[in-house]
Length: 253
Length: 253
DNA sequence: CAGTGGTCTAGACCACGAC
DNA sequence: TCGTGGTCTAGACCACTGT
Image 1 (spheres, rainbow over the protein chains, first blue to last red):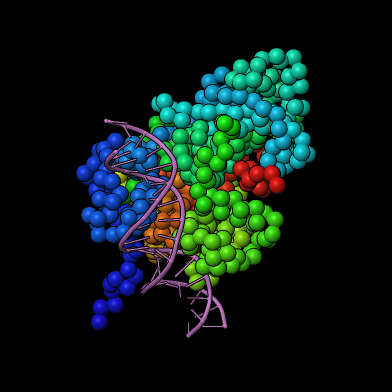
Image 2 (tube, rainbow over the protein chains, first blue to last red):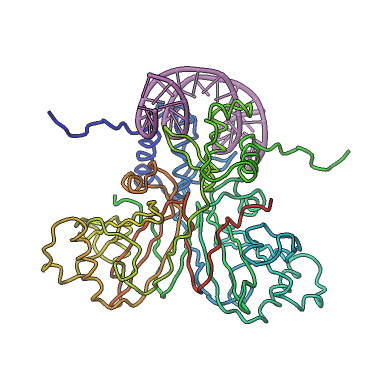
């Protein structure tokens, strides 16, 4: 008898749906095109709307679709390559920095950040909020934690709250000798405040990039940047080169 | 009257649930502990099981929970820091490499990889499969695409299919002068084959690390590595230093 | 076998965007 | 006001794990 494993592991419907939709996206749709609404699509495929949504959610996670409440579902453009590893050994806010300062506050950081900074858990630090855009679209929101000991001359600053004051704090930072930095990338979900900056719903998947800046033999600042996982591909260029513009996981047609 | 935005934006139930569960995890549960099953939890919170699951899914995405069919839901240990940026300017398979070769085949790569290699879309390349484990747990699966032109002396290899032959191909690679490499990280979902290696369900979120190796003025190899997003934090150490062991997004208690 | 998480259904109502 | 995606319900059955 044929021991060829035939249908012995039935594929979930949403998984099969995803495959079908992926192929349709590759061959029959162009970037920006609007798909039929979820109720129509579900009816067309003969499944419940929840099942159809499970497939759409995965495609959105993979950056193939973009869904907006009140508008519809559109075919997403290829992910944008966002340089993260460039300008190594440079403080944030230096020349060529891709970020835009928003404001600065003084408050106690999250416990994990306080530990990284080696400061007390209730010790207040400067918290600079910055955003990053590419092609006019917001791609990342950042919180930059700077202990007062890293910017000693801040007392002279009299800029009012807002971007001007944030930039003033960053300018002070440039005066310190930066010895090195290290980074970590992990998956997270957008907090309410970040989601707002990124024009996404809270809970959307984000790539969290944590950078520690070392100076004077200790951690002088910590940056926690959240990038939109649906639209971004983080690039770490060790050597100059052209960007990969297509999803390497995407199968050959 | 009071323009203080009071409850004008009601929080979704699953979002509130997630907050409550997060706090409970922080204060009342320890790593490895088993949570009540989904039906009981849903009843306890007075919501439908689907709503409860929406909260659990996000917590799993954030690496706080681990769910296994037929077993239950457990409190996940903190994410493992996995070094990705170390041993720069070294071919895969060199000394100190954390990967384990599984086998090697010859086939045409996905279109995106073929483009990166500058080879024809139907041109076959060597495809080395490798896996990576930490603390006994599988954390990543890799496909390494090597054009025949990068390993010219392969004809002499007579190792049988399997790990031995894969290692032989990698050994040939070491003979070429590596000029540089660049990397990209993005969010993806596990294909069926990778999911199996990673002991996860197909579609699970993964961090896809694409590395291009440059030699002789061209791209000599491309690696596509998929890391379990739930258990891994990818580290790019530019400077020696201690790892951050806690989730920096996690709020202070 | 019993118990768990995974999939699926057929509805309902809500929040948002555009007109 | 209308159409969209987002949330939620109360069930059902399936696939897997351990005993």
